[in-house]
Image (tube, helix red, strand yellow):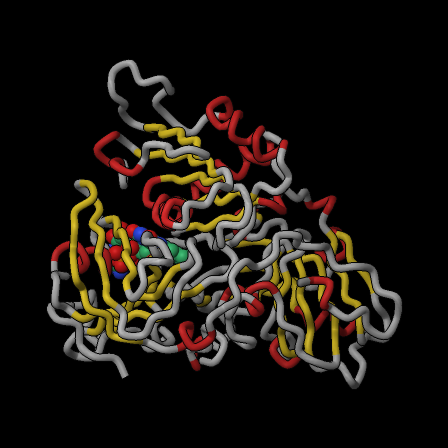
Length: 204
Length: 265
Ligand SMILES: Cc1cc2nc3c(=O)[nH]c(=O)nc-3n(C[C@H](O)[C@H](O)[C@H](O)COP(=O)(O)OP(=O)(O)OC[C@H]3O[C@@H](n4cnc5c(N)ncnc54)[C@H](O)[C@@H]3O)c2cc1C
């Protein structure tokens, strides 16, 4: 385990540490840092679309208006970035992925998905991490449209995994019968990314 | 990497391609294991930045641009961890250098500035990140804002240490001359073009306007990167700086697929 660093006194004592913070994370409070490896694209809602294909019975795509017509939900819980910041309360509004998946009809053999952005960023997720009310396509943050730097007009939101899984500028999901590592995962990051298990890098 | 995604059972439309490939094969062991590094030197770079030189018991050469995680542990077991880019060249075997800006009230940067001294041991893991990395194989344009110069300086140092001849362009933005990191090394060598810009105050008669990075100033560098498609562009700095520089570069015609961005938060 970790050894004591001479002279280091943290901002908090271990006992004061908020139990909602996964190991190794700190509370960024009002900050919402931006992390992405790309130039932020300027994507108008009219140019945005979301599709689900691969191992589904009814592959289809939704326009901005079609996606926005689905029932809205709110997520106000924590998010966790692999670079160590967490935000303990947020306020995202969007549509549950369950609603999209119900229309596409995943096949029995579908176990994983590649989520991809309009810029070609990809990440892999187990289908079980995308269903059961734990993943959304989010449009708004704190009552305002998501800014481009934060993935606007729409991003994937999978808050129980590290935030690199929550693909910005989301374009679609491809359902597969196996796990297929995405952009960060081939660059040394963990395939699942559970913050509570501290699954940051491959091998963690 | 997207071409590895199988087409699936029916004919599927292609997933949009993210053309910029990863540059560094991730070192799996290095990514995973924490090790206790020894501080061998703490040197002041500017009033707001210090460089910490660490000796590593386990050496995994990084690729210029990569970073490490630094973890501090208090006596009661409380830990804080942050990422720091490697400033030194990969050939500086057994050693890495971080250059850390003091953040007001910063938990980890404050410790590095006020407490760390030679002989201390600090826990690190790395090298990390396989995308913001330059092995020295292609011409590069480096665009730095403030401490965003740190990983880009590793690239400059790598090129010099290996005597590489591949062209390198550097645009470094600092608040004032006294805030400029590594000033003594920022004189271009053959094959290098440098432009240093100041956002708050510049010496009298300085050839570039004081203020935000301007399209005109970036233009000759962007034009070189547009003209030679082997060029890769690395942008590093605060989110505000990275967003601004990214917009200027794309407006100047640099394809986004050749721009790699690292945001320090
Ligand atoms: C890939 C990567 C590479 C990086 N490379 C470098 C580098 O080479 N050099 C470098 O200097 N930095 C680098 N950074 C940034 C670095 O990781 C840290 O974010 C930075 O040093 C600040 O950490 P800190 O602990 O000092 O500040 P923090 O304690 O995290 O605080 C940051 C700011 O928020 C305020 N704040 C946040 N929470 C609280 C709170 N609870 N109470 C009071 N104030 C609060 C602080 O006042 C401070 O101004 C890099 C970041 C990334 C992601």
